[in-house]
Amino acid sequence: MRALAEGALPTMDLMDNTFDIIIVGGGPAGATAAYQLGLAGVRVLLLDKAAAFPREKPCGGGLTARLLDRFPYVREFLDAGEVSVNPLSRIHLESPDGTRATYQADSTCLHLIRRWEFDAALFRRAESVCTVRTGVMIRRCIVKPDHVELESSTGELFTAPMIIGADSANSVIARHTGLRDEAAHKLYAIDMMEETTYDRLDVKDRESIYIFLTLKEAFGYGYIFPKTEHLNLGYACKLDWYLTKLRGKGAEFHGEWVDQLKAKGDVTGETNPEGYKAFPIPISGPLEKTYTDRVLLAGDAGGFVNAFTAEGIYYAMTSGSLAADAALTAIRSKRYDARSLSGYQVAWQREIGSDLQHSVDIQSRLFNGSDRIDALVRKSKEDPELLRLILGYSMGMSTYEALRNHMVRSTMPKWVWGKMKAAVGLSR
Ligand SMILES: Cc1cc2nc3c(=O)[nH]c(=O)nc-3n(C[C@H](O)[C@H](O)[C@H](O)COP(=O)(O)OP(=O)(O)OC[C@H]3O[C@@H](n4cnc5c(N)ncnc54)[C@H](O)[C@@H]3O)c2cc1C
Image 1 (cartoon, rainbow, N blue to C red):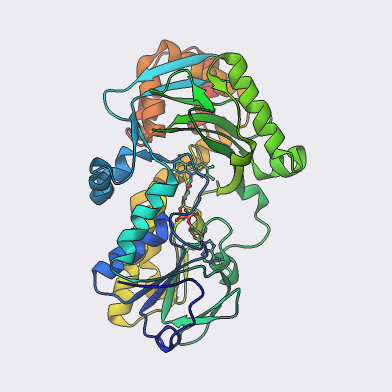
Image 2 (spheres, rainbow, N blue to C red):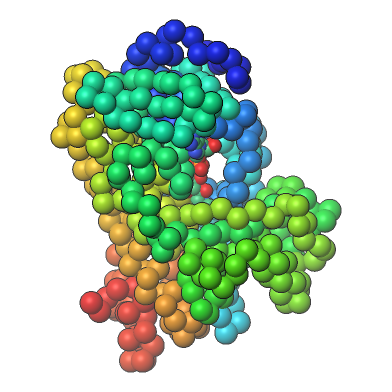
């Protein structure tokens, strides 16, 4: 609708509650909420600290089929070629002891995109129906009795009757409203990655996704995601491990990881140190409370990430959409108190709550011992149905219950069964 240039002076209407709602953060969560509310005729101001879109966002860029089912307009713009996509249906899964199981699905498991393009496509849609300001970093949020006040890093003030905080893992909104406490180190992972063109770094099999459940000491996994023109590979570990063991040497660790992949014959070429980026991911499931008076949290800001697979885009868009539903009700009824906004928490718990809770359970059990992962991958190699259900669950194509039921029915040796039951939380 209206886009104000970066650095433009605030107009009176920005200062004067002309907007029904302000959304902080124009990633998948914020752009989804803004688009939905704008289409419903709500006056939305969408703020982002990035100077402009497209903007960089370190990410594997794996979109699951359930995302495309939930948001058909995404399927449409992928099909139309607005964003380039590599749809892949084969996965190589490797355990710490080097056992590799390969799964060929009947349909696409992951649609690999670059966030540079994908987020810009979502942002364009939001921009077509609401007012956006880029280059605005919010550094303070105060909830007053009759409005919310936001202050930018340059001292600009923005006010509105309510806000949605979609400002990512380090959310200022979550911290300043008391919804996330400051000491949350153990609740995060760090993903160290690069996205490099194929002329420099290539993979043996561009038709496959590679997942390495290889980290023995702490939560972690590596991945290779071949995109249309870029090779994306990365390694995620717990933030505690990153801070205490790597001590700022993430780039060196990443280089060694690429060397290991080259030694195995999976990757050829050279890493691009300039392309190295590390970014936090919340891995403890959604915050206990994702709303307060006049405020809702969506996406990484609210902890909406699958703690087992680090899938976050689907959950960001879904929580953004559910936050938009709740905001629309509040704006129409002019009831912005926490009690009136609590329907948001009920809605996300119903749609994605148990899924996210299972992911936390599996992560805490599976990433506690490499022998558990070895047992699981070895058994999956012999049992194609188990492999299908593990990877299907990871990619959002089959349910946790189907995986559990198969494991209950299967006649595996007692010791393997014990480890696997512990890994997926069957023995509490
Ligand atoms: C390396 C890595 C790999 C990943 N791989 C995958 C994957 O393959 N598939 C998947 O589904 N998920 C993946 N994820 C998770 C996924 O990237 C996130 O869950 C998802 O981006 C969350 O979307 P969001 O809109 O909440 O936040 P973001 O995408 O981070 O967007 C937040 C926006 O808010 C803006 N912002 C932040 N702070 C402020 C502020 N103070 N003021 C104004 N604006 C602000 C930022 O500029 C940004 O544009 C990965 C994450 C990482 C780190």
